[in-house]
Length: 378
Image (cartoon, rainbow, N blue to C red):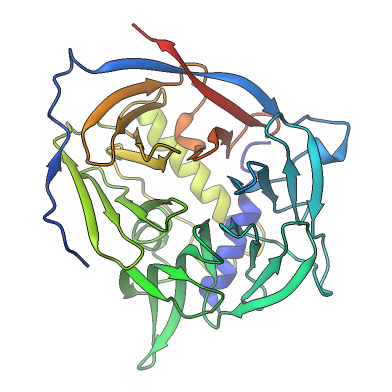
């Protein structure tokens, strides 16, 4: 099932074609390498089968999160539904299904489960955000976006979510790409804007479009509405924490040595991205992608129930997390040695109810892996 995410990026392609109170500068160098404790993340359970009960078979996992009830919510783009599981991995219910009628969805690409328990689902066709009650009943359309829906959503407090949005908008006769990160409260207009960048849209320059938008940044949030933001950069290791009102609460900066990608890594990344965009309905877009020759310093981030900030290193292939307290001090590192198969194509979800991961580019079929922090690794 390599390259199963072509449909995801086809949706994006179609879509494209039509702050601060506290002084930043916290440094993680308060502990030496010898003083930092090292732990392991072990796989304790999994959800998903290749064949059998359809409730446990995933078409394309598009988003994964815990709800405020501790349940696991998995958005399946192919099945056009959200599959809900207990913390022990038992199927609970489905939310929505494929279709164009009330409460039905087509090619969903993002999901948020907010603090109120409501489930918001993004569908690019028509630019709609559907809202479902915690019990699964459809509540209605809460927002309609004209030039591009949020591509990633993270539920926060109340009925709000953080949206990472890429849109292509006309500006004085020229199409411009606009990438932004904002707080949305059941409206197409952000209540708070944390980041925005714009650049000319060039249908022949896939590399720039991705690096300045969907491949350029990672974001997390907690149930208090705080936003954790980091660029996916081969030159900069930096995490910024914003309050819900966009005040800068913390900035973590580290000096990290750059690591070059191997020829195999570069070729695999190039083939993967070009296959995603070179799938169905690629239109007249030139499908050519040129990977950064160096690894990103940060791969992704999360925040747990204790307010600890988990930052996955991008410079190593085995998943390793640097874990900081809410003041930016290094606490420990955590390694997931069981996950070694192309970890650059994995997504990790770390929130107040635990740690999960799933492969975006699986060899055979997708599964959700549930991990726990266990004994020391050394």
